[in-house]
Image 1 (cartoon, rainbow, N blue to C red):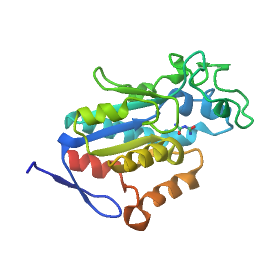
Image 2 (image 1 turned 60 degrees about the vertical axis):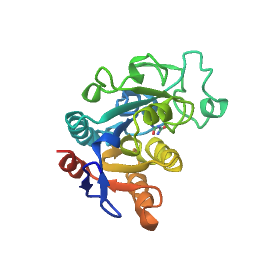
Image 3 (image 1 turned 120 degrees about the horizontal axis):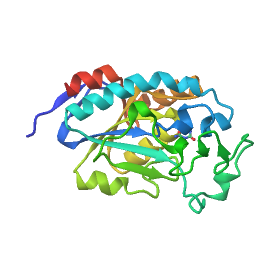
Image 4 (image 1 turned 60 degrees about the horizontal axis):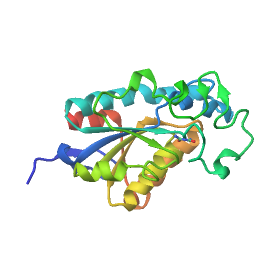
Length: 223
Ligand code: C5J
């Protein structure tokens, strides 16, 4: 048997093995965290996401030091919008739509400055970056193949937003058989009540689709 460490989590501690563990950092992009991007175009106060950055940085450092597979995701679309469903493009009444030009380039378009990951959490060479057109990181991406090739069975998940892309990804992963640990303080939402509810939904009913932990516990377990 390989050595395992116990990770403090809710609703119960769980054994982890760094060889089969990956850190997945969801959508920590300028378009969500900085003014003038997609999040702001929907009327959100993007400063609410800033608190998640230092814990996510700590997680990244610990995961890299422990030799974990580190995966980054980015939500966004092809320049011609051919991978963006009309239902997504026309939804709501934003002050700027996906593909419109904003202060960080075209909103939510791959290759534009706003689509990039924030400077504090930039991927390192060799870390897979998964570009996803949807909210979940498995839909229409190579994430499943990347995890399978490395024999990963457990995901440590952080990023934004808790109740949208983090949740959708965790639900997708859970149905594919992965154990998911959401790191609460390294996630964020424009709607704090949804952040709290999003975490509570995961641990309810004995952990119906995952576990919730915090960055200090993960760093301690990886140390
Ligand atoms: C949203 C995301 N909230 N990354 N995307 O539209 O959570």
